[in-house]
Every structure is written in C-alpha cells, then in structure tokens.
Image 1 (cartoon, rainbow, N blue to C red):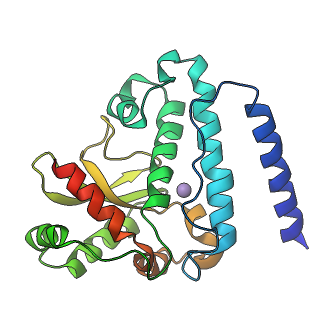
Image 2 (cartoon, helix red, strand yellow):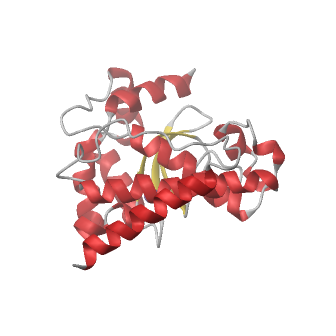
Length: 230
Ligand code: MN
C-alpha cells in the first residue's frame, strides 16, 4: 500500500517541480534516457531508473538552473568548462553541476544487456598495457567503487600522459574538476550512491558492481577513449 502512495506523491512532486521550473529560463535540461527505463533489467530495475533519472537527475538540473541568478556566466557555459573551473563557484554549483554532468554521462555509458559491444582493439591494447588484462581493470575499478566511503563514483580516466587510470571521487565530484586529486578525462564511470542500486541490491554494493558490467556500453567507451587521445 505504501509503495503506490509514495510513487503517486513522487510523480505529483515531479509535475509540480517541472511546472514551477518552467517559469524560468532553463539553460540546462534533463536529457532523455537513450533506452526505455526497463531496458537495463534484470541488472537495474525500472523503478530505480525512473526515480534515478526522473527525480534525482532532474533535481540536479533544477538546482543548477537555480544558481544561474547567482552566477550569470553559467548560462551558455558547457558542463566541461564548468567542471574545469568548479573551484570558482559555490557548493551548490559543484554538487549539482557535477550531478548533471555525471548522470548525463552515466546513462550514455550503459546499454541494454547484449547491446553494448566490446572493447575496441585500441582500448584493449591500452588496458593490457596499463592493467595486464580486462579482468584486472574490472577488479581495480570494483575495488575503487566498493571502498568509496559514503556516496560517490568510480572512474576509468585517460590521464594527461594519455594513460588509463582507475580513480574514484566523493559526492558528485568527477575527474574533470579542478578540485580533485586525480584529474583526467572520464571514459567510464559508475554511480555508487545508494539511490543507484538500493531497491534491488540493498546494502550489497559489490553485487551491484559485479552485475553492472553486463550493462557497459563499450561502443561509447571506445568512442570516448579515441576522442580523449586526440
Ligand atoms: Mn545518481
């Protein structure tokens, strides 16, 4: 009984939030998911995707737009430029700008099971050089994701030396931000906030991470890897 009532309230809140926010100029908008909300099942369930995309990501977009009055220069600024000078803004821009960038990327980095392709020959070569094998990369990535205390993300980045590295960031930070310790261009990332997995996996973050590899959109990772090398 509680679940349908909660869903209804959440839906109502969303409609109201869109109605209110529509009254303002909105340079940032919620991108549509590149697949149906149930397309990642059984590894990520439909309700998790609906709440994660429609509520959490929408809130980052709305909250970021609300900051444009404090920082007019945000209007028309690309997210990448914002990340590179995130230290010049306040915590709300850092959290919500990061939240918008990270989720926009996260949706694209996943594909329905069986549709994500394979790592390209060039990417596999870099993985072998950097980690020895794809299994070892997965192990180090999952370790970074599992040991991120609280909420955050794990990443595979291309560093300034054009090498692959595994890293993790807290909250909604990401490797493009001028404030993080290990900087680079993210080509793969996973959301380890509890909102990303709790409905299906509860406290079993490790199980979520193991299953998540079935959803990786290697075609997009390959494209981003090639772009980062240019
Ligand atoms: Mn999230």
